[in-house]
Image 1 (cartoon, rainbow, N blue to C red):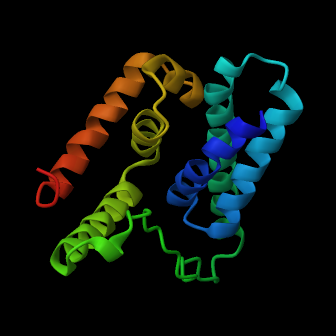
Image 2: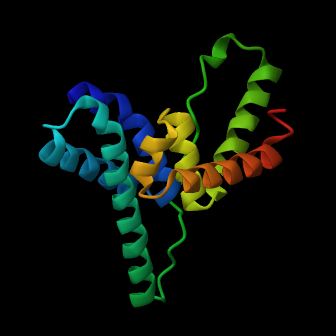
Length: 172
């Protein structure tokens, strides 16, 4: 179980950060999901862990959105903008060995990818990240998202169309 959690920790954090847009909330969501997986599902087969973990993480993300909504309703005078300077930059390969122009292009492309992922609707974002980052198949993604396989395909198709449109300049 420890090696599974270590293998998904970084990507799960990024997924939560994209969805929740707050470092502390994302860390809490991932930590809670990991703890619940260990406490409740460590006896399950290893093949069941990825969809279970991502379903739990998805639920924590949904809880975070609900909490934020209630906070905004109860404290309308507060500014809830994300001003903590979160850097959602994806890790770029050792850039010291790249020519300057190529490195700048890659950094620009990654920044645009971050923004495009950040701007996707939550369900499209989840479908994309689970399928393409986590490598889950359609069935496991549907289990994690608690929806039908057809819904996963629809959300993924829409996400890919949006990303292709937004990033056509950088990724033909």
